[in-house]
Image (cartoon, rainbow, N blue to C red; front, side):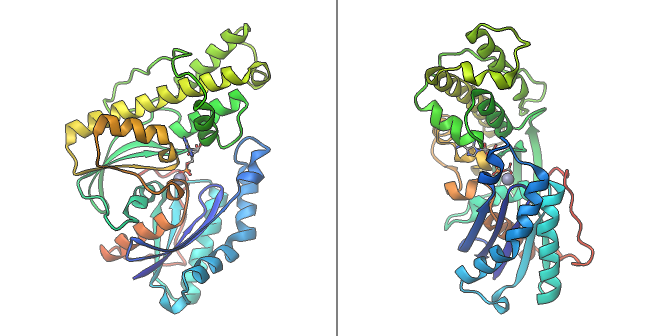
Length: 343
Ligand code: KG4
Ligand code: ZN
């Protein structure tokens, strides 16, 4: 069974064809990073317009690379939530139109849930019950999946997502967008002991908080260059040398990863799942993978690096399990988007 996936929730225009929920026939991702880089973050209006420009060629390329004609496609899966409204609308309208024109079942898919399904694009998909740590630019959640579509949210961030914290700290340090890869790279030359950063105290055993950590980074850097807390964060980076940038990147990365691993290890012990998967853009972080393995041991799974950040293959993979699970496809004339729907 072949599913065409379409994803446009943020700043990647993506389409992919996946066979039987695990075989990647094509995976086309047109990133807008270079367009948004100059603004230091995603500009929603520009994101939506850029999706319009490349959406149709991206779908055509995904079909061509998979050597598929429309007759070969069994259904279309598309991200309908959550994300930037203008961005979501472009993918949703494209999928609805194609579903009507080509007479294909239409499956609306939740983007955050789909991140977990990047781990199913493998010869050896993870077993249930499955504990998922979902770490992206918009989400930080621990979710226990008992089966496909049967899950319980164990905990989540009470403020910023961890990817958002990487992006914000990178901005303070004057490192390029997106912040995650920039921080990881700078951290390689830094001393993680250089700055002592505080640990968040939270009520929920499996909850997270990253906004205090970001503020602690700002305060520590202000103190380091000898200015008070009123000194604007956007003027700090010009006063930092490369060694300080690297030291703070390493110290911040260690603190953020420690928080993620500590809560995940606790949930892992309490729930004894058959597998642990890490999903979302921050799952690309090599140091996170390494530290998680030292705490949990072997048996932690991650998607291929190219499938950690936003893509349509994960959308198609989840679409497949929804279809075989008997989830009715929706009426393409009726399907809406839900920009702020959580899992
Ligand atoms: O899943 P994703 O592509 O988009 C969302 O659904 O949010 O995640 C993007 C986030 C960004 O915040 C980016 O900085 C972060 O993932 N990221 C990383 C790395 N690569 C991407 N964070 C830490 N280390 C990385 N290597
Ligand atoms: Zn994402």
